[in-house]
Structure formats: C-alpha cells, structure tokens
Length: 445
Ligand code: F6P
Ligand code: MG
Image (cartoon, rainbow, N blue to C red; front, side, top):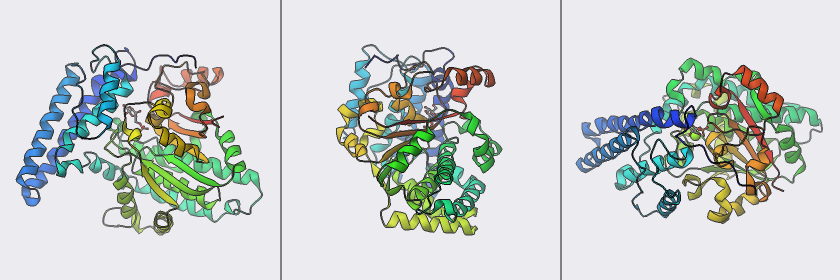
C-alpha cells in the first residue's frame, strides 16, 4: 500500500486537533472532576462509605494533574498497569513515536484515546469507582431532552413498518430503496448530536438537528454518498447478520436501534450485533449499561416524558422483544478502546476481524470510528474511501461508514462537491461542524 499521509497532530496551527488540545480537553477533564464532585456531594449525605469518598478525592486529584499537564503542554505519561492487557499496547505505541510527545504536539487520535484510558485507570483502582461512568449523567440528561425527536421518530417508524414497501413480499424495489435511504439517513443524522461537541450547542440547536425536517434538508450536505452501492449490496446478499459498531448513547443509540428494527423487520438481517465500548469513551460512546438505561427510560414516565406516548411504547416493546430473543445483541471487544486505528485490526485483533468478516454488513457509526477507519491521516479530500481504508479495503469486510463530519479528516469527495462546500461553508467548517456528512461503502474485495 502506498504509505498514507501523516495523521493529524495537535501542533498544526488552525487544525481542529489544535483547538481541541488547547481549549476542549481542559474543559472536558474539568467536567469529569465536576461530575465526581456532584457524586461525592450526594455520597457525603450518607449513601457512600468513607473510603469511597477518599478514593473519589484521589481520582479528582489525578484528573486535575492531567488537566494541568494538558494546559502546560507536558509530555504524555506512560500508563501504569491496572491489570488489563491493553496498557502495554498504549505504552508501546507511545514509545514508538521515538520522541517525547506533549499534549500540544502529538497525534490527536492516539492522545485522545490515551486521555480516556488514563481516566479509566484513575477510576479503576477502586472497586466502587471502577464501575462508575463519569459521563452517565450527561448521557441520560441529553437523552431525556431529546424526547420530542424520539416521539417523532417512533411515529414515523411505525407508519413505515405498516407501509406496503416494508413487507418482505413487496417487489417494488424503488419503494423499498426509498425506505432504505430514509432509514439510513435517520441513523446517519442521529450522529449529529454527540456530547463531546455539545458544550457549544444550545438545546434549540440540538432539537433543530434531530427532527424529520433536518433529515430531509440534510441530503445536500452528504458530501460523499455511497448509499446506492450499500443498497445494491444489501438487497442482493443472502440475509444474514448485520453488525453495527456503535458510537454515542442516548438519541444516536435510539436512531441506531430503530435502524436495526428496520433491517430486521424488512427482512435484510436475521440478527443485529451491536458493538459497544467497555470503558467510558469519548464522553458519550455506548457502554453495555447505556443500552439498559435507554430501554428502561423509554418506558419510565417518571424519567422520560416521551414514555407516555403510545408510539414510543410500541417501539419500546419491539426493541425489548428483539433484545430478549437475541435478534439484537451487544458485544464488547477490547480492541475498540485501544489507541490503535482500525487498519491495525488484522495484526492486533485478528479474532475481531474474523467475526466482522462473517457479517453481511458492518456499519461503522460516527466520527471517531471513521477517523479510525482512515487512520486519521491527512488525505486529500478527493482520495477514494477505498484507498484511505488501506488493508481494510480488501480484508473481506463489507463496510458502511455513517459519519457526520466533526474532525479534520474527510475523503471521498469529487472535485465539484469539494469546490461547492468550500464556498458554502467557510474555511474548514464543513469538515468540522457536524452539519455535513459522508456515507461510505466498501465491499471488501
Ligand atoms: O474532539 C472532538 C471529538 O471528540 C473527536 O475527537 C471525535 O472524533 C468526536 O468528537 C466524537 O464524535 P463521535 O461521537 O461522532 O465519534
Ligand atoms: Mg462518540
């Protein structure tokens, strides 16, 4: 393979990487300290043991040190062992850069993974805090705030599920394709709201990003669109398992679950496997318990006002049934929370590669998964997706990436589209602000 360009570094003036390192990471780490504070405040009123409170204070100290390291542009520290094997991988990679890398002069992707792994390390010394998700509060609050979009989507899904085009016996391929496009867009734009970018987004803006109108208006903002190729693949391949490498909890997870129901119900998948993260990751990524939290919130009016809505109840029942009988299942793998990009999967996680090869379609959701597919490398935007995914392009995995653009890297555009978006959205806004997207497919051959 021709060697790819270098990955994006936080030292690059004007890059989103730099802005993230200088401005967003310190705020992010502070938000974790604040969250622990809130829990300690509740704990001090009696529901926590003294040693757990002390451990919480130690965690806050470790996080404050991390924040200071970032602000003062200190070197990334090697991680200490907490008994999990992935630590060696982080430290080997850190050493492989052959120079001291500091927070303002490091590969963005690796350093941000290192940040989340360090956070988990500082929690993991205590049995109480090891099971604690510093982002759980934010995830649940954001989901509760998205009730209007959840209700709207449930109503739409039920009317789609009762339509002629949905029936597995239907031979109107055009109508079926239209449904596929609509449902794929639901899952795509569900990624527009993730909590790591929310600090600058108002609730009104979130609502504007989530509704049906936003989805319709979104088509012109899909700057590279392989949906037709994905559709051709899906309708012609034997019905089998579909995998979704999930991104964010809350509203995005809900759109993914609706998409999964559609794929099962319309006869394009016999089972759906949802790949989740095992540790708190990039703020809002789905962990196993987020699935349970979401399913119970959907039927709990005390928590989620949408739970009173008939359509929400009906969709929740469909989801619960599929989850209980195993058509919908979640799966963890340590590879998803390493600092490695996905092109390292054949060497570093061959078992996972084999699992994904057996899938009819592997859907990668979101910005981070996309960056890991293309190595976060500074490809010219007109590079073919197939070229950017390197070894994965012929590893026998059928890949569909659904990603709203929230970072410096993006491939698959033709010259005309590139010219248009650069005029439409000033500077690099179209790669960064989450309002544009790509849908990229590779048949793996
Ligand atoms: O720093 C911004 C960021 O955290 C990126 O690192 C990451 O790619 C993105 O936000 C998370 O987005 P998503 O949840 O879509 O992967
Ligand atoms: Mg995410």
